[in-house]
Length: 247
Image (cartoon, rainbow, N blue to C red; front, side):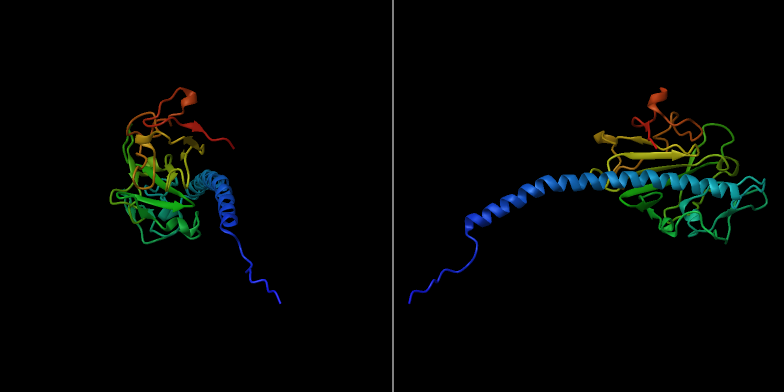
């Protein structure tokens, strides 16, 4: 009796063909997946900045922070907006930090998870870092910037009461450029999101390695009271070319 002793299986050539096919599919699919992820994160960052603007508007309208007791509400930091840190309050003419947190909050509690960029407080959300800045107490321009404390909430030198009723700004940039996002974004009290391509090697914002300077998106150095540097309006920003983001 003849028996067939051949065992079923793949030949080396067949295996090489399968590997080659998988490699080709991966070479086509992976860049598209990365691109889709980057696009999704950028769209999420734009939506987040608009949500932050709405939260700031609601906080200011509520006058939950009014450190000069003039009835005009002031804008806040992430730690305050998310109920993670004590808010500022009136103290006989000088702002102080209270023992009160906001309830209800104006941002999700996750925004209270403030980490440091090495100097100031920032928040990470879906592949992007966010940094909130409030104005100092300067009575005339230039009006300086006061960043959030590295652990969240109010720093040692508190923002100016009158200026904080009007101004605030926030930057958003990729945690890992080209992988979690490409563009960087900015918004202030106007509610308009603007963007820069973030593709100039020396100044490309990337994680905590290259962080936006406080005045990068503004027309005048060290002045939060100046206009954002929109290229289409003939206004030059301190760093980068900034353009409006569509709806």
